[in-house]
Length: 451
Image (tube, rainbow, N blue to C red; front, side, top):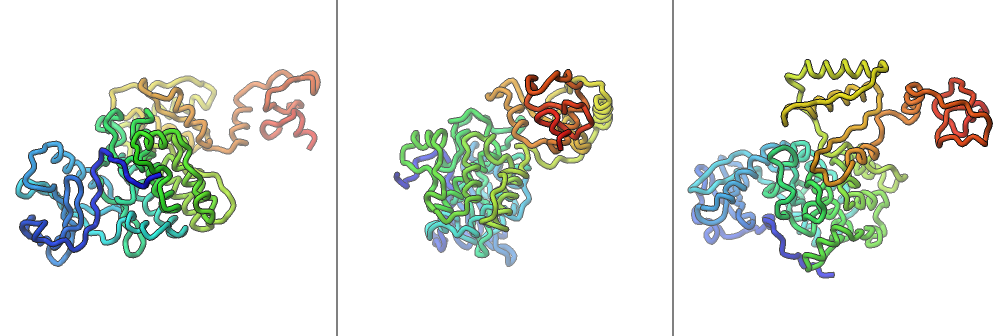
């Protein structure tokens, strides 16, 4: 296979180019009032980043390239990046200090982050396992904060990951970031964006699913595969073949290329590279929990991946305001159901009125009482039938199986007592045949009496 990168419809990340002469790149040192431009740090397809000084402190100054632009789309994209970056407050992201316009060109003043892009670091060879896990935790933590803010980065790759001198990793370049929910979310029918070598099947249009934070986790899996083995799982100069491989070809086991890799870490990378978003980690929190287990004991016993995961799109909610009466009505109906008066509740209202939030509050109250909750969200445009039910079945119940079984027994009538055993063909799980007060379901019937 070839290592050549196919042409992609994306805005390349800035490549560090230290020591570029100011005279040939910057017409004047005072592009922004009060700031002295020192050197060029890098260029993208439409932007350029400079090192600048103001009041004894150094910053990164990002501007659109060339003279005053008349491309309204480029101007809107630049301002949009600033707005999205301001939505996330995390130490792994460059802080945004100022947004403005100079000589008809918009600019951003951001925190200056020193370091090397991961693509340059990987030229020295694959990373040691402990360093790889630490880098994965740093990046996953930034992505988790980004996803909680309702954003997807959509261009996670080694060129957009900066490794600082202390080996901490930071995420840069939010030029392709997009909202993942609501009316302002990116249209899944839009043209593919990102770097195809690191793009999830749904991001390239090969899988008709919405693009959300799980696409970023897939891209992180490709990056970790490259960090572990020295090359991405799929590399070909043919764009169509690359899209096909990401969509249907099973990626190689990282341990086949690097036998000393811990089995747990290889399993984490394989889970990140799942074709179906529902089979990947659903949140950065679940990924970080597994990575920390590996960090403490890389060669320890196997564990269930994603045990601390949370459903995609679930994050920290702001306090519920203005819905006290509706929530009280729902809770009262829930207590009636617990008393034996079951039924169905329909939440109806205008889009954006808080129906989903009310449902989550009710579910949280039920879980707090150790009751099992099956939750899902669907719409007439769902491309996967019964996908909420499928996701709910894969999620562990909020109570133990024994608690679930006892609750089921109490709420159902016993089947007719069998005449004999084993001629009676019982269901897979049956109540004790003596009908004593036994703890839960037993198989075969009567097993509890023979203890």
